[in-house]
Amino acid sequence: MESSRSPEETIPLFSLRRADEAIGVAALLVIVFSILWGVVSRYVFPQPAAWTYELAMMVFAYLVFFGAVAGVRLGTHAAIDVLVAALPDSWRKAVAWFNYLLLALFFIVMTILFAWQAWTSRNVHTIALDLSRSLSYAPLALASAGMFVQHLIVERPWVARQHRNLESLI
Image (cartoon, rainbow, N blue to C red; front, top):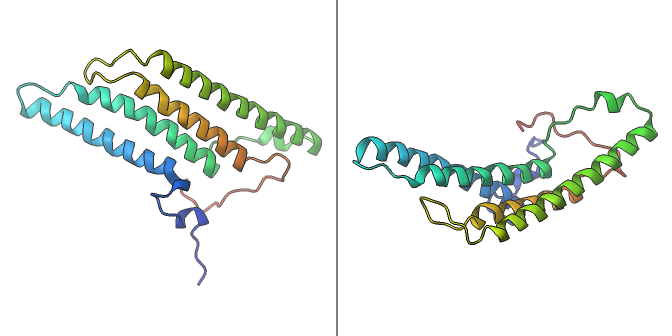
């Protein structure tokens, strides 16, 4: 019997190759429990926990950006290529190279800007948790660098584009 599982699904979630997904799962759990505790503390205790919203907002950015790293790695980003598919082969290759270089540049710029923001906000603290704002921006710089690395690994404009598994839920 042939397995319909992709090779990516056989790698354990808590491995280095899927660290982006593990961070995303952890972030989602923190968001859910933080908001849940905020609701419970609001209705059960005389003074609600003020830090739950701040934590959920910070960790939501982790979820989005590390989820984007997984999206780049798995090739699940949206691509509408009707116009490109109608172009001659030479033009399609030119567009593929342009997209490849433009996205690489974009990920590099995002990494630099988030790293700069993390550095400049290292002495600024959040209101409720009194955490350095660098904790908000430094992981986003790391995730942007991860998107850059995954982009270089996955996207190859010099090779014909392979379509992903259509049975996948993602």
